[in-house]
Image (tube, rainbow, N blue to C red):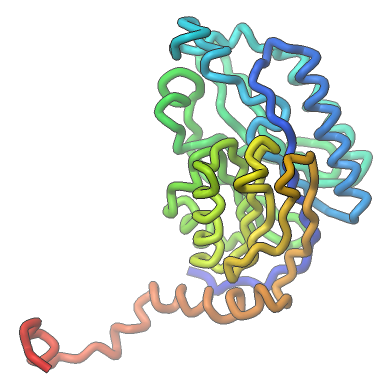
Length: 301
């Protein structure tokens, strides 16, 4: 296992946007795209190099909206209901604006597969040149998602911006600490977590724990609908919030510098993380002793 790297500083914007649930509504898809692009411009105006959006930023298809047994019962999703051309047009416009602004953009969307396979629930990573450089597909799906809506993904995704390494997670994956530990082993400096469910506020608390436990930044992006209990924000490697979007439900971007020399990061990045790696690699073995008072668990005092 390699030692923790020293990342260069990069400016990150995390967004909160309204999430709409009906992919049949072309006007709603267009409005979501417009709001995403407005926040991209705001992030660029604050000199961000990368902007991170919540799950369902263009649309988060509702289980009842999509259900063949709906609108009152959950059943298999009919993905022919999705206005794919409109959704793809909005994503293409996002990618073009990323190129114009020279802004890396991480945005969630269903990713269409070859029929009859269900789509992935995905995060597209669009570079500052406007191309999709990689895509993360949610792996640990909820029971409803995997039963009726999506095909699960299979692998983690890591990408670099200006020497800072990012990993991606989606949806309910905040509940799986092994996924965060997996990214620590891959030398990430920041995990981008996009979700629509916060159980009110519990997901944000868990995200803080993952940041502190792995000594890296976590960007927590959620819809404006959850802002009252868990607004979007960025968590430092010591587990503290660096900045958060307003709790009043406003579309917003919070902009922070991921800087390993900052007081909120230096101890965790330069000392805690390397020591945990050394301890997991077996540093204690040479210090263990053979002693009957150690082996006897009932030895008193």
